[in-house]
Length: 450
Image (cartoon, rainbow, N blue to C red; front, side):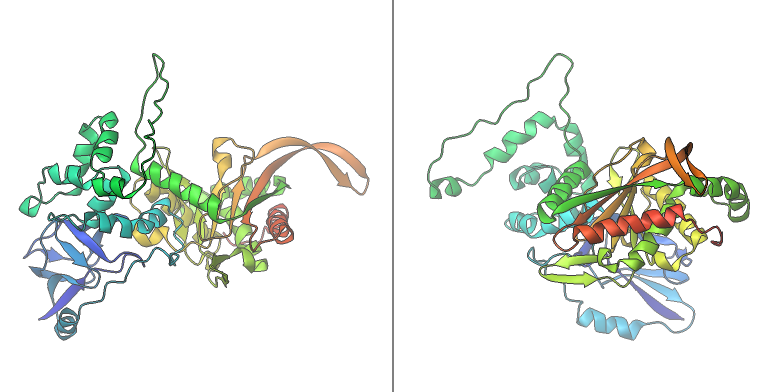
């Protein structure tokens, strides 16, 4: 019999550690391939670590609420044949170095999820604020506290239910839920260091403005995700020179083709054929023709991406937004795109996405027509340089040109809204790109395999 050492996998370039929140399997339990073994929490996402082998759990190296570094062994599994014990000993004697997080280095993950970029940029600030505390706080707890405006002094007073009375994520969320929102502001002000006020010249104290309330008005605290989205959108507008191009597209032919094949597609593939993968097909072809739109800008360097990783903005039931990414989308045919779109959208709404499924996007697509919008001006997902919004498909009167003359007819039309970064994408390129997407949609290839 051999031993397999299951290590904490890499969770992203800016993630150095994770907290064990719950063991799903115990010592002596049998595990199969892909069985969830332990729940972990990072400062970006909560997820499960699954088994990479079949066997029996011999040892758990960490207890619940303990912090694990990337690359450290979580659990030892007894397996048939020879294991990797020698390799693990080398890892244990020479731990994987924790990458230093620096705010001045732009993230390389190109995360289209609104959660990824914002938490990482505040990591060093949060760490410094809690270094002086004698009490242990996980990265996830520290970041939640920062986003909710909870100071260290207040945090130290919250009872913890973890090991050695450590404060867990659940403890903090329960505190936030049960605490009146209007009591949060004074707590932050009370804990400001007095030496800071003494060191700076005295300034007139500003009284924060109070909202004007009527009889039926409500005050709602922004959720953590809403705060992150707000910061992410504002940061993008401050970073990129946003400019838009719009074009109207006649998709009558595409509409008729989908009507003809959607029943047979569902019967054959077991998947509903929506317009999303059809639009994506045209976008992917246009990105091949104009690779400058499939790039990022880091400092004064333009990085043209080899892979086309297409992000699709997905609305959640609570009104928030997440952008799962279809990796190597240009390698998929229409069937593959359809299955990926349906799968990611379903799991996104159930909060079942994996961390790697919301990272590394190179271009983003959003279907605002789902909400009845004719057009929009979407905000670029950093560090990408373009995003395309598809409006609602409408029946419109149109002039139809024929060899026998022009006449008025009813056509199905849609408006494409293309936002792009004018720092490196000029108006000609941005306009020609969206025009090329329109051409692919209007001249839909009926021979596409489905």
